[in-house]
Length: 127
Image (cartoon, rainbow, N blue to C red; front, side):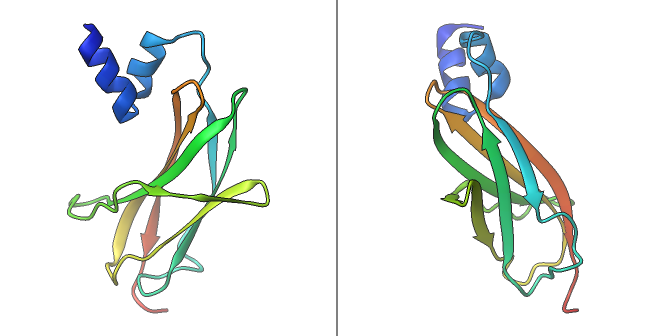
């Protein structure tokens, strides 16, 4: 892997590339606590995304991203989350799209290394 490829890996958040460039830094640990399922959410309400982040270094930013699972036609892009009571939160609305979505939370610490967590949620129509 040449230096330009490594640098792009760091800038885009590719954790394997970042770990290759700076293996001495451990990546942040990210754990999504909500949403866990579709029981309290549907495609016509806001979904609160909550995650905890831990690291041996200061956290420089935490962002979430939501993409449609089945056809990949929806992508929220990375959206900054806010720190509240020890957890990071963000609010997302599908624009009334129903279906399965990947929820990803990405944290970056002060040494430039990213950590991730993700899972799938299902948003039905009105409940």
